[in-house]
Length: 338
Ligand code: NDP
Ligand code: PYC
Image (cartoon, rainbow, N blue to C red; front, side, top):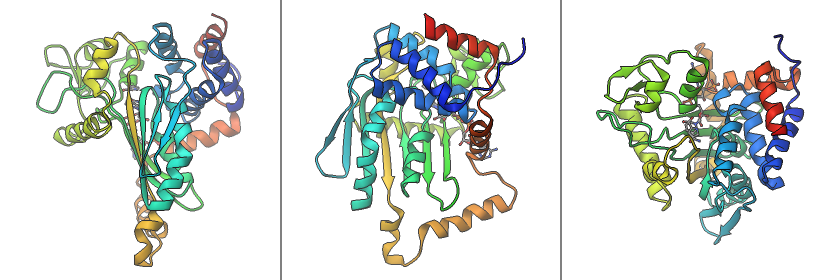
């Protein structure tokens, strides 16, 4: 079957909003969820694009997320700002807190946004890109489900725990990286299972701790942290900072909470925003210009900066629309009707 005509980003956004509105999401949440899903598809980050709709619908059907939750901002005027998602989807909670976070970081140099009690399924680069657009450096992190064995172990205990960093640049896209602290995101393994293709070696072990390239065996066994003990330690840091420190679930508790039956995880999230101008004020140097020297030198060696592929995919999608497959379009039609 030939591919359907490309769909524009605003049209796809409207269609995804309509899927979630039909499921009872309020306008704020339907728009925020559609925003991150369509952004994933637009930037060719398929593991957190349209593919995630199915998971969101499963978690809605299971009653494990509050569709009509209205996030609540708590701001005591200090460095830590909190948003209680009240059991709803994380993107609406982030949107509720991001402007206040940025204002506070600019006022006092650094600030943190704590998101509580949310259903989290998205990529984190949205968070740090939004802050870089406001001239801020930032880090975003959260636990997920305990699918990953610590380096040297073979039993899942850590999450795939993503970490994203954003740095503002002038006149061009920000420097952004965003990755799972497992070798690959779980969504990547699920996409391999769906397409019936083996996963690369080194991503996972089976239930017996034996290395495997079979996606089913990997999903039933344990994923591995990237960079052996180094990724394992970064992942542990995320459990501590974005789980234990916030008094929210760590990945093992998140898994126990839903039973790990194919549903998306419920936990908290932490976003740190730093104002480069405040940090450098006494130096008399321009931090963005200084950073630029490094970034241009990296690119000057022919090395690609993280997110370059994504920004290129975005430019193409904004110009030509998003090319979905017939199967993806059919699935979208079904989601809108069922
Ligand atoms: P990838 O390994 O695909 O990419 C990680 C980062 O590295 C990206 O910023 C990417 O940029 C960059 N990159 C990739 N290849 C190169 C290269 N050759 N040179 C320079 N930079 C490169 O990501 P993961 O599979 O680890 O994670 C995918 C997504 O999954 C993330 O967005 C993450 O937030 C999300 N996730 C979410 C979880 C959650 O609980 N909510 C849990 C785990 C993951 P580019 O995009 O341009 O290729
Ligand atoms: O891809 O590992 C993942 C993931 C977990 C929760 C959302 N994405």
